[in-house]
Length: 90
Image 1 (cartoon, one colour):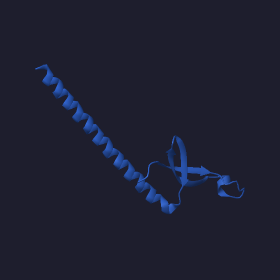
Image 2 (cartoon, helix red, strand yellow; image 1 turned 135 degrees about the vertical axis):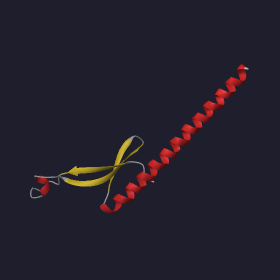
Image 3 (cartoon, one colour; image 1 turned 180 degrees about the vertical axis):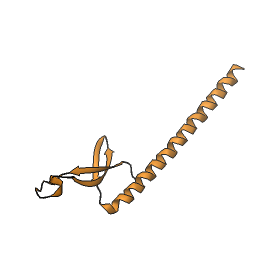
Image 4 (cartoon, rainbow, N blue to C red; image 1 turned 90 degrees about the vertical axis):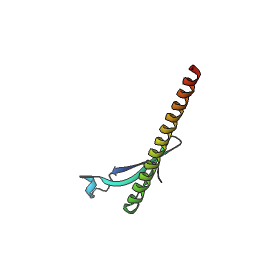
């Protein structure tokens, strides 16, 4: 499970004869994530890319499930509090 975003770093290597000097810069996939409010990045190789994508997808699925449970918990609390208030009015 991985928290973060996949990004693509684009850069020029500085070699005058390289294709990036006059054309498309080099592209490197990376994982961008934050730790204690600071953004960090890990550059990835092509082999790591699918593993990282799967880890991010697992994190997003778990986060969505947790959000759903939290909403259900709040709704259950609201229902219970409304029933308690209705019982006091009688």
